[in-house]
Length: 142
Image 1 (cartoon, rainbow, N blue to C red):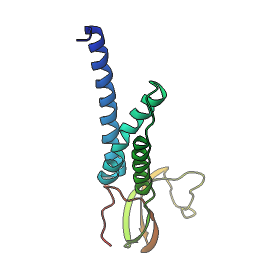
Image 2 (image 1 turned 30 degrees about the vertical axis):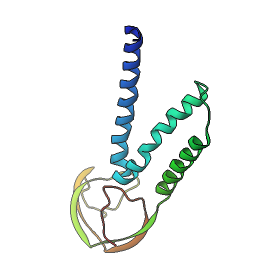
Image 3 (image 1 turned 45 degrees about the horizontal axis):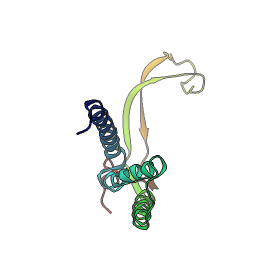
């Protein structure tokens, strides 16, 4: 049985490592989406393996290299996914608070123009396509 100090140090290291790993996983869920975060999360042990090889001098085996390459390929494939997304915006008329400055001077001559006021305006219909990185906030059908 290891000494209490060794056990405490190991428990602290494990708690911090797992805690940081899980925190980063939750952040990845939000920003990458469930599928991508789930695909990237298995890469975590490869960082541990890299540390074991570089810091502890563990042996690099062919199966370790093959596993690392397969995980890296999977992450690369997921990260490289892009597709065009056609988006249509309908005409919209709305009013919002607005402030004029030196670069935004469109009031009519003689018109009272308070620095801060509400302004009603209209956006024309618009259809455009742009690259989209799919994530949990971009649900759409094709």
